[in-house]
Length: 268
Ligand code: KIV
Image (tube, rainbow, N blue to C red):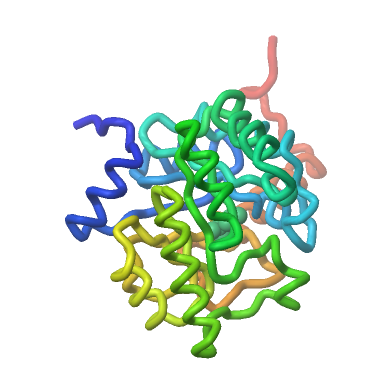
């Protein structure tokens, strides 16, 4: 049976009905096609593209043009999953007009159905401005990688009572501003549970425990393609690096030995 295109209304329904929401990142057409066909609910074109594809140490250098390019490729590969595109650093923080224009590009040029941006109370006005022109927004609070320099590293957030209170207030502000869902990254599981119960919009956890309404992970992490560093919250479901290395080694060996190309790969 063919599945219809997932919408933000489906996400709200899934929360109400207790059906977990699955989210994975993708940055290109082939990965988007594969995960769409397997039935992932949401594909996030994360600005993590900067780390896992471009090899930067942080997500900060990622540009709007790069996000539009990757979003377009993912949107072409996705028939059913909801495509959410990340707004990169400095594409929404300067002023509301720029935020609207850049979010609009991800929808109009990229083909995304929603955008994601980082921040809580401080970004409520921006979220509202985008929702007001009919651009669905996914919030992102807790460990927000674009704030790496303020946080002093990739650290679990909300461990102290005061920080936890602030995150709860951020979650409420994101919901009140009109977000359709929010990512909770690297916060204690008990706090994520409290936030999930306190808001009506779905929470999507990454390093935020079992009680979130859904889970998101970076595709390169779950496939074992990021060998440099793996956070505690990542579960590796496949060892694609070993498979890829094997294929590359076999190709090199066969070219060197003259085993490839064979007659079946040559023209008469
Ligand atoms: O950029 C990204 O991939 C993300 C997820 C890790 C939530 O923001």
